[in-house]
Length: 109
Image (cartoon, one colour):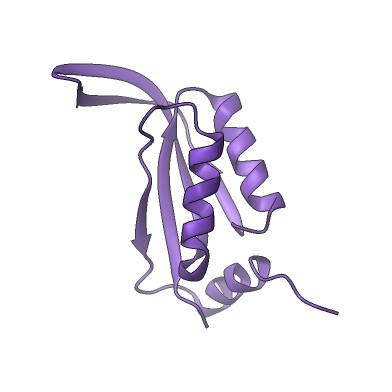
């Protein structure tokens, strides 16, 4: 079974986060995408300290699909430099991990 990843990104508004979530699931690049409640991000950008309200997104996918997930996020993300971070899942309920793999695999025939 492929290794499962959780890919993290933040979007500036809920509508954009939901659009990304639906696209990733529809393309079978993610089994599940959690669109979380707004948060405040504080970060350094172009020499200054900024803060913004953002919508965190957690994407459950397979390591083999990471490049496609990254490309889809970059395509649909409004930021000049979007946060895209993948964290490997070291442990998890076997049935859930199998479900992630099954939902991100296109069956032939």
